[in-house]
Length: 171
Image (cartoon, rainbow, N blue to C red):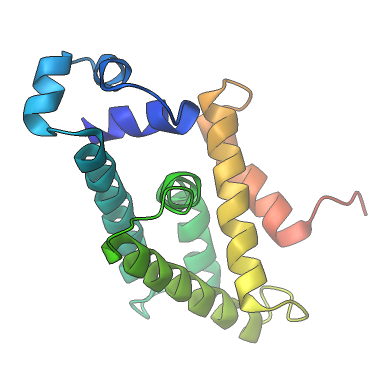
């Protein structure tokens, strides 16, 4: 159900519980039984997004994959990072839990991309934080383009790889 609500909130940050329920294909009454307030719903969405990011990063950090495969994994499973950038960074948790987890996830992304720099797969003249911000920002842009129908879901990995690894130039 949260997977259905997240894109609705991403497209309309002011969406009412009625609109969010409709996006999930359930009634407002059902949604409010599951999540009594919009704040509780947003917290649940943030927790899900952070859990999804954690799952991808844990696999990527396992040491079982060469850096190329790690980058392919991040690119191929870009959606939670797009959602992280789109929803969790924009609506930080005042209570601190989501904010602390978001910072920890971002630090882990930076660390993986620094490994990519050290291996020569990513440019080394930029700080790791810049690379991580660029990855998350590109992922968010690609996800939004798919939500708006300007890009197909299957196009996203190629778009991310091209722009992240090769830039926008026509060299």
